Image (cartoon, rainbow, N blue to C red; front, top):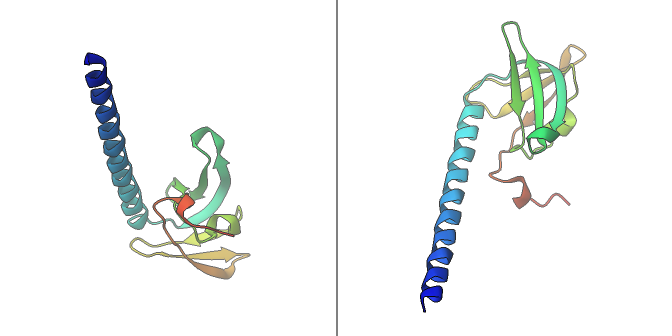
Length: 125
């Protein structure tokens, strides 16, 4: 009888921890989206990589006049990361969801960034 109670307590504990973790992950996703939305990603792509040491996060390193920033594009499902190349210039202003891509010193294309909570929920077949 005591064993059943102990197993029930452990089971309920695991369920509580699971749902708390999901809630925390959603808050992190919302924070990352707000950070993305409020940031100016304008400059030249000096490095494009899939960071295998950090959960295969698609990362762009962008250099502008004053600093270098890293843009982790994992929640974008528009195909933007696959399209851009090193040495392309980007213009993404704060509070905009459009990114202008300049290649060979002229406007190449404009992407509407589509942010998803999880990449796995979209079927790209």
